Image (cartoon, rainbow, N blue to C red; front, side, top):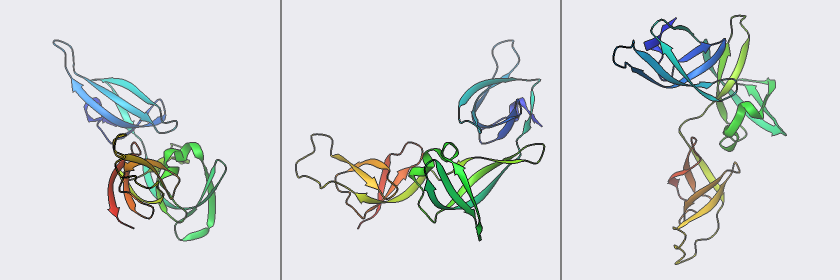
Length: 194
């Protein structure tokens, strides 16, 4: 059990029997009132973010979360197929809603980390993909840089091997490896030159 002031960022809690990740929390006290913890919680089942205020008397259960790595095989329509690490015969699909934007950052053969929620009946449910803050992707297609074409800010749209389209500087060419933010899909830096 967590007290109201122990509900902090990166904690996983159960609220109304649903798992949530605490995105932000702020314990505050207004004049003669008792302190409260104002939080933003991200649902691990549907991804929506809600605001919730916990009072001094509130206690919540910590969600039983674990992490596991699966190997990405391929996708067919809205199903992404994976197998357990070290066991290629244990294949299973994961729906596109659970994969979310991670589809823009993973390639066949990649090891992908998932969050697993275990409820009171010991039933496990995959709640989402855990990507690093930045990922290195090879540029597959980039229009040529045109000398003197900086009126538009000196950027161009490049396509990575995963199909993600990224706004990058003019000097990025096909074959270059760039670091891309998994938070907003923005260009971060060139890692290596083709």
